[in-house]
Image 1 (cartoon, rainbow, N blue to C red):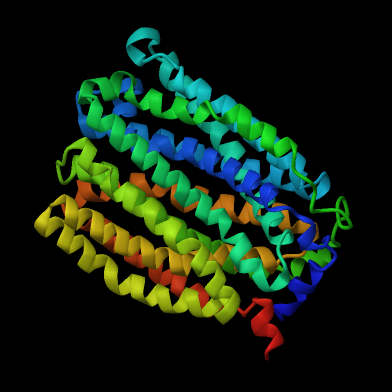
Image 2: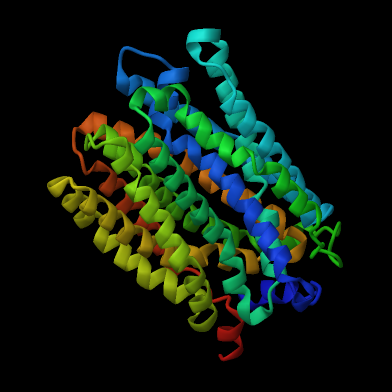
Length: 431
C-alpha cells in the first residue's frame, strides 16, 4: 500500500499555523511529567523492592519489585484502547486532561503508601494497584499527544514537531536522573530506602496541578473527523502499517528499557555506589534531549526510513562492544560514555518510528491506533525487558547478557525498518 494514502487522510486537520507555540509547550510539559513519574519507579526499583517486598534474598526482592514495575505495563493496552478512542471520538484535549489527572492520582497514592513493615500485605497490594492505574493512564497518553503534535505541524515539519513526543520522555529521564543522583548523593542507602524514593516521586506530583491547568487551556486539533468512524474494510488497509509499527516500537522499547536498567545494573551487577549509578541515566536523558529534535528534523529532510536503517545498523554493531568495555573497566566514565553512545544511536533510529506510524494512520483512528500499538509493544517488551535482563544475568552468570538480548531486538527492529515505505511529505513530493 502506498504511504501517501495515510498522509492525505490527515489533510482535513485545521491549519497548523493556528496552534500557538505555548500550547505545544503545554502538551510536551504534561507528557514529560507523566513519564517522570512513571520512570521514577524503575530508577528506585532496588529500594522500592525492599520496602514493599522484603525478602532474605536481595535478588528475590529485586525481581518482585521489577515484576510490579512490569504490572504497570499490563494495563497500558487497556488505557490505549479506552483513552486512545476517547481522543478520536471526543477530541485530543479531553483525552489528554483525563490521562494526566489519573496519573497524578496514582503517583501520589504510590508515594504515600506505607511500607510492608507497617501495613503488611496491604502494602504490595496497594503498590500493584497504583502501578496498574499509572500504566492505564500512560497507555492512553501517547496517542492523543502524538496526534496533537502531528496535527499542529506544517506537513514539511511533521517530523520535528512529532519528535517532541520522545524528546519529552528523554527530558523526563534526565530530570529523574538528576533528582535521583542528588538524592542518592545526599542520603544514605537506608534513607534512600526509607523515604528518598518517595521524595523523588512527590517532586513530580507537586507539579501535577500546574500541568493539569495547562492542559485545560489547550485548543482542539481534531475537528472535521471527530467522532467519524472508518468502515471496517478501510481499517483493514492499515493492518500492515500497524503490524510493522508494533515490531518497530517493540524493538525500540526493548532497547530503551534495557538502557534505563543500567542504574540498577550498576548497583547490583557492577557494585557501584548509588550516586555514581545514576550517571548513565543522566547520559540517556542528555543524549535524548540533544538528538531527538535533530533526528525529527533530519527525517523531514532525508526521510524516516534512511535514519531508521543507518543508525539501526550502527546500534547493532555497538551494543556488545560497549557492554564489554563497561564490564572490563567498571568505571563511572566507561559506564556513562558507553551508555550515552548506545542511546544516541537508539534515538536516531527509534525517534522516526513513531513519526512514521502517526502520519501513516488517518485522523479518524490516529489517536487510538498510536495508543494501542505503542501500549501493546511497550507492555509486551518494555514491561518485561528489565525483569528479563535481571533474570538472564542471574541464570547465566554472564554480566554482558543484556547485550545479547538488546542486539537480538535491534536486529528484528532493523528488519522491520527495511519493510517500511517512506512517509515524509517532502520526500514523497520529490519522487
